[in-house]
Length: 77
Image (cartoon, rainbow, N blue to C red; front, top):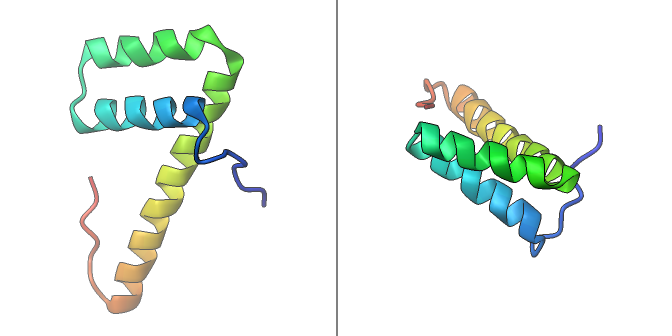
């Protein structure tokens, strides 16, 4: 299994993370269009979003696993 190799200071990763969080937290056509436009600007943007989504999924999996081990039902959005 390979893990993302982004640098914490990578501006593309930071932007991907911000755009994804904004769209997730308050979905709107405008936010979706902004993300799609940004993705079309550079192939590295697609890679950065993939890394951000991988991080999101791994974080969610760790919450689910911790809740399962504690015998609780996780509250996920």
